[in-house]
Length: 281
Image (cartoon, rainbow, N blue to C red):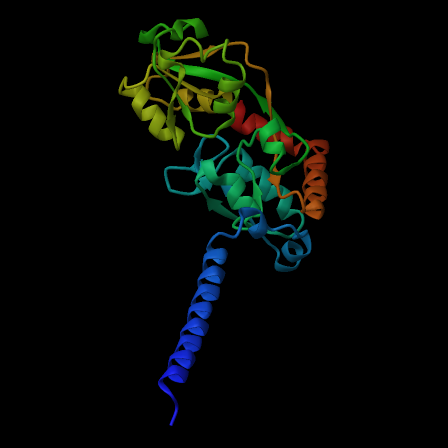
């Protein structure tokens, strides 16, 4: 007969093994939940996959006129949509357009949910740390759109007034980079942030904000398509010109070469200029 002491020892060992197993399992599961974002990034060159599948997924904010937006029929259209479709069409590759949360665009790219960002995407030093840029293909500056009744003829006229902009946009970056030009004038020294510009324009028209910082191409297109464009004011300041690029993962060297080559061809044969005339006038 096994002594009571031996039973206690055996039971203790069994419990210890079970406890150790639980600890190991918990550590593994918890570790999986907290795998760093860096470990989940797509680092390989995906160009061979894209060429083989003949499909590329491009992320965009589908409210950003005139670069990429929905027309009255709900169809995706715009300058960047036309340009990207033409560049990849020449390669026999179909573009799968994927609307995304613009504030998460670099994360969507680097975790492999999309293959590129092509939507009035401006080259900035901060973005260069996270993604690779194509050759610049368009440039513009940031302006303030307001209702004429607000009397915003200069950036300084925004003193004490409420400014809106898009969160994590190039305009937001520019506003913070050059605070003396506009940011220091606005109420509270901070703009009201919006996830999309259509919501921002709704608040502008309802006088919930006094001005909206936006790309000049968007501003001109939006104002020209209003029932009463004469009611709006587009105000230029001293912000520098920004350069639009295609954003790609740093590991996608093959894709970058293909996009750069396609953009050079579009410029050389005049197709790029024709699209600029079509969308920007």
